[in-house]
Image: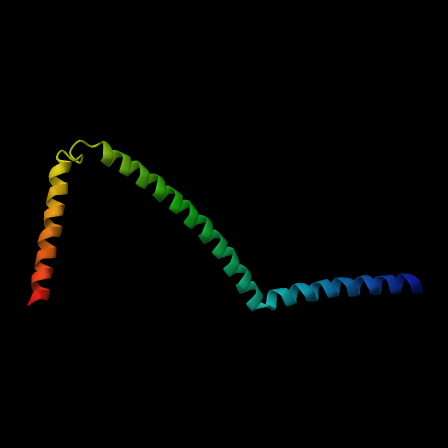
Length: 102
C-alpha cells in the first residue's frame, strides 16, 4: 500500500469510529431517550383521548335522541310541572321571609 492509500484508509476508519462513538453516546443518553419515549407516549395518549371523546360524544347524542323519542319520557302535563315548580318557589320564599321576620 502506498502512503496516500494508507492515509485514506486511516481517514475512513476515523469517520467510522466517529459514527460509532456518536451512536454509542446516543444510546448512553438515557435522559434524552426517556424524554423521546415520553413525548411519543404523550402523543399516542392525546390521539387516543381525542378518539374516545369523539366516540363518547357520538354515543351521548345517540342516547339523547333515543330518550327524547321515548314516549314514556315525554312530558304529558308540562303545565302541571310548571305550576308545581312555581308553588315550590312561592313556598320557599314564604318560609325564608318568615324566618327573616322573626
